[in-house]
Image (cartoon, helix red, strand yellow):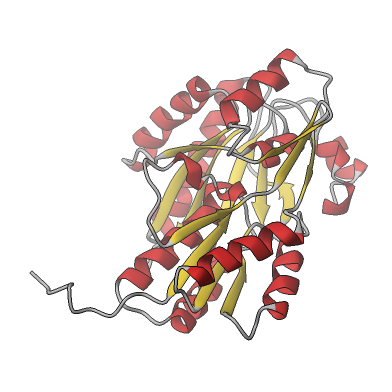
Length: 294
């Protein structure tokens, strides 16, 4: 066995945003910290995934179908406090992985604080271009490589190369929430093309689009389309598959069975965080993938 007692301490921490669904891991690596976005609900502000768990949020959505939740990035003070905590623990570098800057101002806030604190700590910021557990994968990969002894700068370069391989396909129960995301180019023409079907949508590089695959009014048709898309991705090259769902775990289990039949794999399932759920609604279900390192 290698002698780990004489190995130098790792000088780099990893910060992931709460939208990466990493709260659902059985335990977090000591190197990993969570920067939380905010959910505004019924006049109160909740820390995403911390004092508002996905299960509670989606129950609220089910019980309040006309209710509207809003979201906000972390305050500069919250980012600054987290960085100070990490510095006080002896770290001299941080790798920060964030959800796509096209759907959140979080990465800009992190960049501002990192510039202010540049004399105290070296920060590598990765705008992953994605969200949910696809985003969380970047933080997990950073931790894995740091534990293997890679330098923080090399890890950051690897994560940048990984960004174009991250993709999510998913279906939503209703287009009502998506219609509010005007800054995402979800135009009326886009929605008109979906009619009243259960659409299969693609989220790639911070943009929503139609997945360009079959869909139907039946949930089963939509689940088949999702599984077929993931199977094609898995056949094309080695990828890491993950499942994601918003509130309805039983619906994901139906998708998981199809994924197993078509790919031989049963991806780990991660709930969609309340911040993301506020913008896509309840009962979303999907699958995502990122290239496996060679």
